[in-house]
Each structure stands twice: as C-alpha cells, then as structure tokens.
Length: 357
Image 1 (cartoon, rainbow, N blue to C red):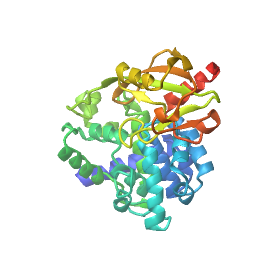
Image 2: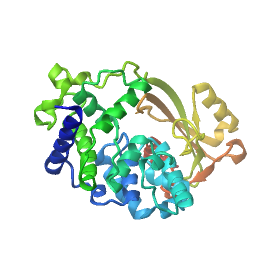
Image 3: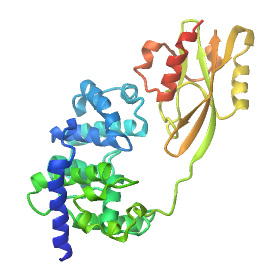
Image 4: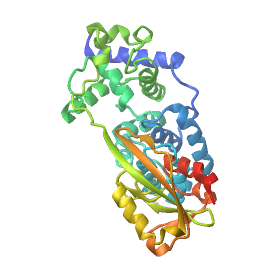
C-alpha cells in the first residue's frame, strides 16, 4: 500500500475509534468557541484532565470571554490559577488575552500560523485550536501524540534533535485526514490525544485495544516502550529554601512579589532565602528579637517537574518596622484569594492561621 493510502487509513481508523471509544464528554469538547478551547488547551499542558475541570469552570464563571480576562488585574488571574502550577502559563494567558483584544479585535485568529505567534501558544497548541475550532488541516505534536506517532512510524531518531523534531512534524502532517475535514479534523486530533492518554501510555501500553495496532512498527519490533527516543535527559536539581512567615498583631502576613523570572515568577510569596545565613541576616535586620516570637515549623518537600524544593518555614510573630522589611505589603487571610500565591505557600499560610497569638 502506498504511503498516502496508508496515511488515509490511519486517519480513518483514528476518527472511527474516537467516535466510539474516545473522550467526548468533556466541557470544552461541546463547543467550537476558540476562547474556551484555548483556555482548556493551556490548562491541560502537563496537567491532568481531572485537575483542570474545576479550574476551567471557575475561570469561565469569572472570565466568560476573552475581553473579561484581558481587562482583569494580573493578580486576580494569578490568584484564580493558584494551585494549577506552571504559573508562567497564567501570565502568558493574561498577555495573550490582552493581545487578542488589542491586535485582533477580541477575535482569535483562524489559522495555526497566526495563533502560534500569540503569547504562550506554541505550534502544537495552535494546531489544536485551529483543528478543533476551524477544522484547519494542521498537525499537533504534544507529548501524548508524539508518543503515538513515533511508535506507529517506528521513528527511532533522537527527539532531542531539533532537526528530527521537524522531520516528525512533516510525517505527522502526511497522516492528516484528506476529506470531510469539518468533522474529521477535530475528531482525528482528539483521537490522537485520547490514544496517547488512555491506550498508548508510556508504560504498559494496551496495544490489543489500539485501532492502529496492525500498522504499528514499534509493536512489530516488540518494544513500544522504547519510543520516543530521547538521549538527552533533563537533570533534576535540589534546592533548600528558608521561608520567613512574618505575622503582625492584626493577623496579617508580609508578602512580597517574586522576581519576574524563575520559580513562582511574579507571584506573591513570603520572603525566601537560599540559605540559613541569608535568613539569619534578615532576622537580625528586624531589630530587637525580644519584640517578636520565633517558631521553626516542620520542613517539607515540594516537587516540581525538574526540581526538588526543600522548604524550611519559620513563623515570626510580632511588631515589625516596615522600613526593615523591604518591598512588600501586609495582607490578611481575606486578601490571599485575590492575589497569586503558589500552592505550597497558600497551604502553609492556611495551616499557620491557628498559631496566631
């Protein structure tokens, strides 16, 4: 069978499988509104569907359209995103909404090429939006789809190479549906996502349940889990942070905005120090230690994608001279919800509420 004919067969089998076995009940699948599809695609990046569902509903309740999101203060956007992780997504989400309103009259572009130029929308996300909303014949290549296609094609080139990534994009394009695109493109795109999420999993793939089993070169070779091939591995790093939780006599906590780049960039947070010496110097700058009460809280581990944060919180209660604290502001518990707090910091502050004196 010729390559184009085989590509057509692949698309037809994915479309047919998705209609009967794929996920068709999710709220963002019931619309072709690009705002809602875009919102779901950004939230779903490296995040489980079960986690996204509640956040998606809350965002739409507060920001029902792109103009509402564009006009919202960034702190409110970050506050609503808190707990979903990968906070650069929220900042880019806000910037993207503002750009859609300012440069496109509040209407999302209808092609993947133009969509990909917006903040936070890469080629794969742009392809998903264009396929779902406008039935554009463009491929996607997120982690799930990359795994499905490298196994199907027996693509054993190193995916750490940009040239090999481009080659796979071209092969993905050759497999796209060629007819009835209005219905086929959304279903084919969703079908590849569903296969990667539920059948063609990283470990112990359910090959007998896959509609592409007969064409899968990785299965024929006997080792699907070898794909995708990536020789350059990301190295995990470990850091130890001291967290200074300052509480005044009104039960408020001193919060500072994190730097614009790095972990928790741009979010509100308690003062953070990379070591005990820096933290001790900060406490010394607060003045007479008899004016405040110090309590060392239990340390805990916060795991990020490629980094382990060993967090050591210290609760300091008392009266502080604002001049000694640097940039920041006192915020009470009723104000925490309106600013962007990293999830572990929000949980930590909630847990320390009972310790107010």
